[in-house]
Image (cartoon, rainbow, N blue to C red; front, side, top):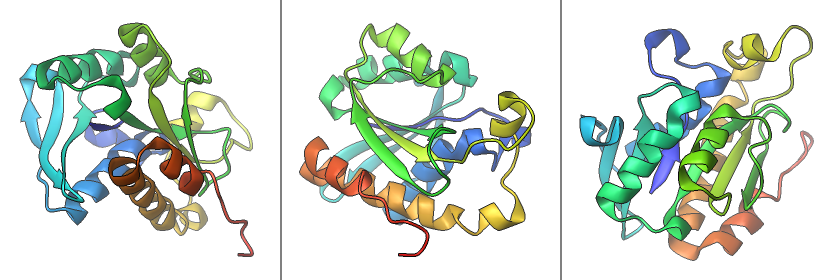
Length: 190
């Protein structure tokens, strides 16, 4: 099960905080999967096959700080084991365009991850953090709920493609190989 975190509603589309939604949407599109609203899991769900593996894609339709409710409901309903869970999330502490894949790390102050940890009662799940860049000025909430600048938007497609590739590695080759791929970031000159 791959979960992209974000906030529901048109006003949050294409914001930094919704990069997780964008990543699972791109993954679903690549494999011809269609998202449908599912009240059972409080989210939009796409069910199908990715790289010859059965897969669920989830976009929780609860606000970020309640994401854990949707994740746990989907895991229980579909009998998903913890080691088969991947959360895709924005991270302001990572430079725009870079990715980090970890297991058993804290929420880093991210309300969506904190909610998931609270609901799962553990930090032992995989999370793919997508760098959305740190704010230059202003408060954190305005930054993550804001849209990418015109210059930043040029980097977003490559970031989303990298997220899709890292997720495919996770699905087909497991966590260690996916970490090798996702944590090897290129600098801007490479």
